[in-house]
Image 1 (tube, rainbow, N blue to C red):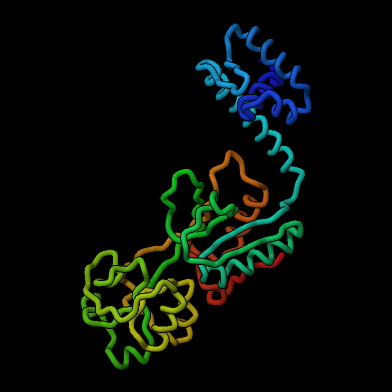
Image 2: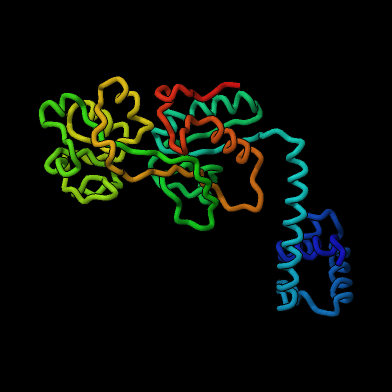
Length: 306
């Protein structure tokens, strides 16, 4: 089989037209028609049924098209792989991310990335809403939790550990729980993934008195700092407050659910250079210890500048 014939046949099928395929290939319509006829003659089968208005694949034509299309994809991938070795990332990079992650980490990482790769421009939306990267044309969606859509590629970035924290003022007013069982009756500040009835513990079902539910971890931290109750806060936003004494870590032996952040992007046979390079840059830039993301200044490992 000639590669040119496979290309011509594939274009005709995908354009549903000899005329449009010829225009896209820079050939005469009569040439394209003749090449398809010669291909069918050489194979000894009819690949296309032609009418004055439509082209329809025969059963054997459908099977042949699927093989030819795979060959074209492999060929395009090989060409792009070679081209990418000679190119730097460029173009518009569209990203969505959780609000706190964007504020704490993404801005600095992206700024350093764009300084290193000046041909990159970016559009970023910090949001808690569900984003479909295919429908909205987003290159990278950073989200908490593994996506359910199996047609997307999900790359795990890191884990976010949580701990129970309260302010000294709250503990002075309500007492300090010394065991998990003593959490009963304490005032709870909860996040959306937490049960409204129980403390967010992996091994125990301990009833809580919910006083605040919110969908923002910074709001939960600020409420805890103000003495509203005990909160199960991610380490990445609470370490500074714990180290400074503004929050007290409670029951360090208690096991809270681990959050996972993923970078999600459309399932393609090969990534755009800008996407792959940025994800690698992001992974190498974050302050991570044993797979857990740390609060930037508390970790003393700020996003490094080249």
